[in-house]
Length: 97
Image (cartoon, rainbow, N blue to C red):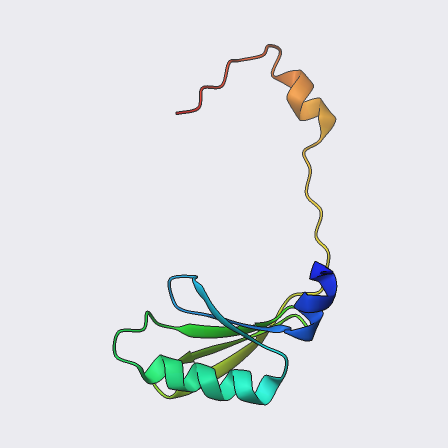
């Protein structure tokens, strides 16, 4: 089974408010309708979200409200200037807990 093809075939992913993937759908209409029904269930963590990773959009559904967010398409690169690291003069140990 080709995982890439199955992801595109069921491209609409539905998540509960706790980030748990609860359903996948091949088409927008059924995914959207099902997510609204899921959001109305009293014990469902809010908000329910439908993600379309192909078109980079998320619909957030809660309390009868539905909001679409288009993911940022700009690429942002960040780095520090090499002279900043050199000017510190010495290396210090970093500890992780």
